[in-house]
Amino acid sequence: MSIASARVAATLESMSVSPDELKVRIESAIPGTRAAVSGDGHHFEAIVEGPAFAGLSRIDQHKLVYDVFGAELGDRIHALSLKITATEDR
Amino acid sequence: MSDPATNQMRDEIKSAIAENPVILFMKGTPDAPACGFSARTVAVLESLEAPFAAVNVLPDPRIRQELSALSGWPTIPQLFIDGKLVGGCDIVMEMHETGELQRLLGVRDGAGTASAQAPAEVGAAEPAPLSIENLL
Image (tube, rainbow over all chains, first blue to last red; front, top):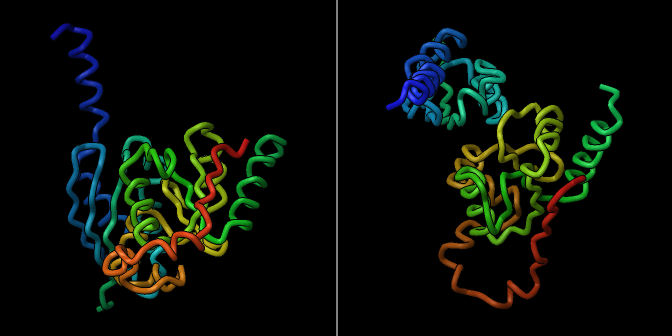
């Protein structure tokens, strides 16, 4: 690999996002939430559950998670597929 | 923003949503979707034989920008029924599984599965899906 392409590869690597980063950011931004995230660095699937989603419409449940990432969605995070479950508040 | 081009785009999007009872903003066209999420959403609507208008957001980045500003929804596709945002691919899939989407669209449960072979008479009465290629 040439120096230039190694540099490009390193840049791409640093731009990619880990599923763990998404998990931690979702869980810390939305109190009481648990997230299981898988993905390839650009496309992710998250199974998210927590009491914060109770009583919200599907749209508002998804917006709550989308809002954690703001403009990164569609950019650094190319796609985030969500499966959201509301749990009982304890 | 007071940019007249921006306002015009937003107005075009608003009236497209108001004028079409079922409208999908997607990447690519129903015949040639340019993204897996758009393709899956189209496939669900087609399996329900639900007529829908489609807008390709790819020809001009302003379409997507203004649409998301209007809907508060960051990603594509976006499905609107009767002027209201239903959601993106995940929500459409979930609502299809639970039957909510069929109810919202006013089609029978199981249309497109069991009754998929029961054919032509339906096809004749059904309006062709309207395709809005470019809002500009």
